[in-house]
Image (cartoon, rainbow, N blue to C red):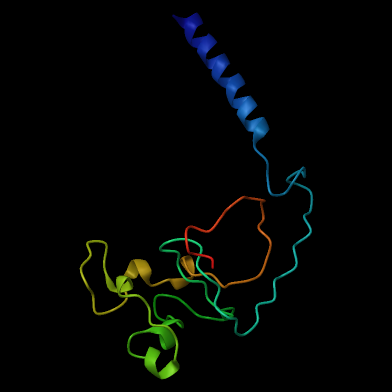
Length: 144
């Protein structure tokens, strides 16, 4: 029984070594101790035209810079323009009613805590190349 267990452990070790050899890092073939050159920071214009969505229920991209926006438990700079109380005056898109639902689909009078930190899902749009090549194609009519 002990020999069988040792054999299984050796086989698992060799399989995991093969799998680990296939994993590639975004750092390329560079050791952890080596210094990486930082990529240039992408310049985000103050205002963009809106990009088309690529799939159903994709969080819309933010068409403006959010570099100094303060979003914490006491303040959410996004709500100053996008909240239901202010979007008409500012001309900004209104946040979705789903952002006022808690996890049990109960409507709240304030933005739900799980939807409060906007930049977790909504990212600033930028015309950049993907980090890793892919063959993604927008779903259906999206991306047009």
